[in-house]
Length: 586
Image (cartoon, rainbow, N blue to C red):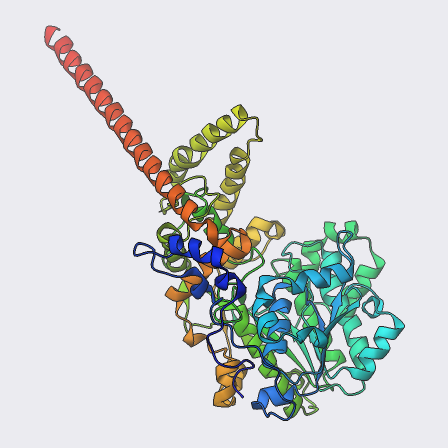
């Protein structure tokens, strides 16, 4: 059984809707031949069906037969995709319990329903109509003792659960040290306590980050010594106030660039020391980006990775970038591939678990990174994405025509910035003021100046206290390159059956970055900007108007610049002629 659904060909309700067909004829034309619904994968849904209990699946699918999963971090980016994949592609799974906390006065029940209403689950809702029978939530919080679980929920997890995924974390690079330790390190400790009570645990998978030991250039699939034990750091957090810790944060984290990676490294050591006798493994993904194939292409729900830069260019806000993007490679992995590797590693860990005397070999670690197998550059991705927006997927709320120039010669940057950012920003804010609306662009460009100034700096030879600032952290990761060892991940891929390789694909060499950039650009428009596909005709007309205004502005600017240059040249010639006449008379 390779797929959960049946034959391809069924259309989504949106596409079958007669009103949408009228709009589609305006969206798809000889000038704009690409079908956005096809590009994102909305036309690839399979016929819904119930998989008979006796139907045998692939080795990975069969491993999850009758399995009960407990998941932390299900409300996050990776957690969403993991839930969807397990429910759609492991039809004989028994149940998934998702840990959900109250947030911003929204109850766990409401947050749980919000998760399942995300467009990411459209395909699951269509192909597996009864999926709601196999997923439920438990109230709790990762930073509470025993995860804040009730006695009833703890008993249920202890009795029923076979597989645990620990994906919950605070991913704020510059979280206060106390908070980062409470969530990422102490939260892991509390999960370990819960896991210890599980009677029939087959596998415990902890999702960390490939940069947990970023103070090493060569990052193997192992742990490295730290200057402080996780228990000692936890004790400090329990004894000192958050303010006290923050005043000495650089002393504690040493050569880690921020509290996020430091707390994740401590959590890895905690797992190694506390549960190495259990079937446990650590997955370390590098920079996680939007989906490559499933369930929809280009799906994303956060502002991680290069998304901020692309949005700035696509909306016509950002027009210059200080630095040379040409040779700046970036290690990115699509979230659906990360999830597939996590699922496959679960089976391998459960079946191959052996208690080892060598502590550093006791816990398998999977560095899921591109690792020069199929890397791309910032410039390549941004160029294609910007080109895709210009050609096909213009934003409805763009304020200017998308265009940018890299400024590699730093002294020129303030001049270009003045004409392409500051002056236009002041003019736009003046117009907004006349319309009795709040001026915003001047503030935006002021922040962009700080970002560009920081990102263009030279990397520190050794981290200093100031490296803890958010912008310096960005510079730290932009200007450094790591060599990730990926032997365990490669072996995991080699050992999969052909059927599992098709369903649970995670070979990064298969990524076509040119195609991916198309999904990425349209996905940002639809899933981040919430810019409906049906607005494309109006957005394209707007982009055409902005292009005309852009070209006219350039013509006027260069004409004035030429006239000013000619005027200055004439004045210079006049000055020189008058000077010569004056000298000849003398």
